[in-house]
Image (cartoon, rainbow, N blue to C red; front, side):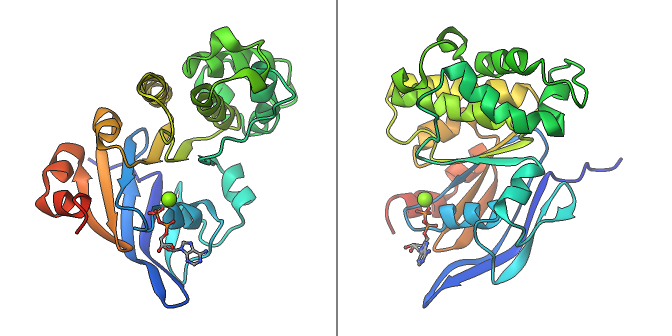
Length: 255
Ligand code: ADP
Ligand code: MG
């Protein structure tokens, strides 16, 4: 039997900022349909790694492959168009539009890829943009925001804005969602909603990589974990195994 090829492959990535080796020999794979957490103390290089993967930064060394194709150093919009979407800590919301319109606006581009539509079985065909409202409704349902569809985006709480950013990423045709500290600044109830949204999304065939400090949140969601420490992979593997690793525990206690 053949192992399916990973959706994302990071191979021996290194990048230096002046005298600081921010990433060194970083390698890991992301499998199709999994939820993978990237954890590590502040300054470990998590956001830098995300910037390399998403095309915002070009690594000094190493390769990034997405769907088997080398995307190292491609501009971020190009990588995004191939189906890798990131949401930032500060959600990008169009405050003057309704929640539904926000998702539809993101969907105008996603419709071109057809992936988002194909995933939920609507049989979308090139040239037919009429299903955008229907698609938006499905995406809002996936993240638990269906009841807010007609509200102004500016009325959303911080937690709901985070969910809307995820819905927008879905609408853009993302096959892999890369979330940098999606739970930051959210309260317990909001984090629970976010966790549920992430599980729903995975249920629709989307692969999710997220950066997170909160180990309880990580434990609820991640099937596998990659731990960065001082720019290197300290541990990686099945979630339970990694969380029990003494080196990981030590890194989290601030050594
Ligand atoms: P994390 O997201 O894990 O907290 P970062 O990836 O943001 O860590 O940062 C890793 C290290 O690289 C930190 O020491 C940070 O100060 C440094 N760094 C990040 N971006 C830059 C940059 N553009 N220029 C110089 N140093 C940077
Ligand atoms: Mg960071």
